[in-house]
Each structure stands twice: as structure tokens, then as C-alpha cells.
Image (cartoon, rainbow, N blue to C red; front, side):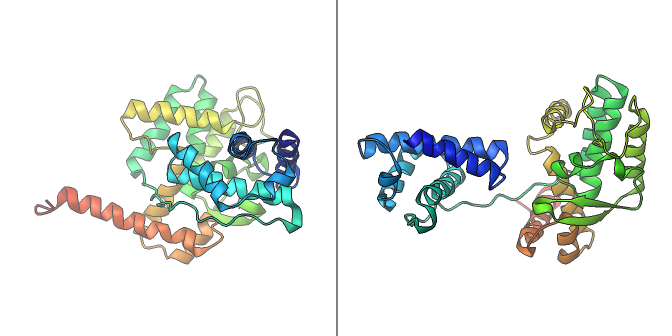
Length: 297
């Protein structure tokens, strides 16, 4: 019974909610663990009728076992959110989901990458590529993330219709929301150099950033290349493709950009998402103070 419910929920996540494969796997694994726990905790088969009788204590007991497995606050909060969604799905419109306060999660601040580090990273990735056009591709992509503040998924969703890049670029972000971002000449030049180096013409209906076999570039390939480069350069683990977007935001704020403009450039749905960068900038200034001020100790 539980297996059928989980399969139906997986299909619901895929077709109705349009969740990513990664999210679906994580949610399904949580539901499977929870149902296995309930079969021992409550005894008997786990089905819709049992799930309808659950209370906050049942969820609390499950999270306690996961704590014993070493689960942290952020992961516990994600599991609780997944379970609420599963129980709502099983119970339908009349579902009564147990109310339980989630663990307090301290929101970490994104740490910016210095401009020279961002450029060194992109150059190292380019130099280590197995083909010249691949190196030009990776350099252009990383420059686009840092120079325009794109998410990696946004950059990889671009098509050849974006060529040649002008002063601005229309980007489709989360929830299909579009925005216009300015493009620096250095970024446009890097993309043009990559397009010229690619073995075949990049047509308007092709992905802009292509993999070695001609299909759309896998983001995992980019992350692996960045991981290798940061190790070679001695950069911290926080130096990821997404950190380049954080750096774009932090450096603009430090240069005098206002929060509303930054919100538009990043494609944030709310100003609250953008305000985190004020704390980032303050943390960066504090790092400088502690390093340089003679009485910082």
C-alpha cells in the first residue's frame, strides 16, 4: 500500500508540480524512510488510513531517529517539508497535516569570490580543457555567471538565438519570469570567441552552450571543471559556479548599486531575497578590517 502511494506521489511531483529529478528523488527517499519507520513505530501496514491518524508526536519521533543518524537542522527542515507535502497528497483536499514547528535553520551568508579569483578560475578551467573550443566555452560561461549574475541553469537554457550578444540579454529565470541584464563587452567578446571556435555553426534553435557530443551542456561538467580548478589554485570549497553569481551581486552592492536595481538584475521575486547581500557586504568589510586594522585584535 505504501509503495503505491509513494509511486503516485512521485508521478504527481513530476507531472503536476514539475519538480526536478533531484528534488523528486530526495522527496521519495524521505517518504520511503518515513513509511519504513511507521511500520515499526505504529506496527502493521502503512496506508492512507494510518497516515490520516498521525499526530505531531509521530513526526517528532521520526525526526528524532533521523537526528540519531546525524541529520542537521537544514536537512531535518527539508525532510519535514517533504513529509507535509506527502501527507497532504495522500489525504487530499480534506487532509489534516500534523502541525510541528520545524528546526531553526540559520541561513548561511553567501561568500563572494574576489574579482581576480573569478578571472583566475575561468582561465584555469579554459587552459585545462581537452579541446580549444571547450576551453573557450567554459571561459565564456563562467564570465557570463560572474559578469551578468546568471544562475547556471539560466545560462545553460540560452539558445543560439542570443547570438551575437549585444549590450543586454533577456533571461528566463525561475517560474518562467524573464528579465533583462546588461552585458559587459568582455563577456560578449568571450561568448563570440566561443561561438567562432565551435566546430559547427550554432543555429538559433540549438543550445548556446553545447557539450562534447553536440547536446546541451550538462551543468555537472561545469561544476567538475570548477572543482578541479579551485583545488589547483588553492581556492576555498565555496568557490562554485553559483558563488560567481553571489560575487556579481556583492560587488555591485559594494559599488553603490541600490537593492531594488539589484533585485531586478538577479531576478529575485522578493526584496527579502536580495537583502541578504547587505549582510554579505558588511561581512566582507569586517574581514578587511580584521585583516588590516592594527588594533583589530
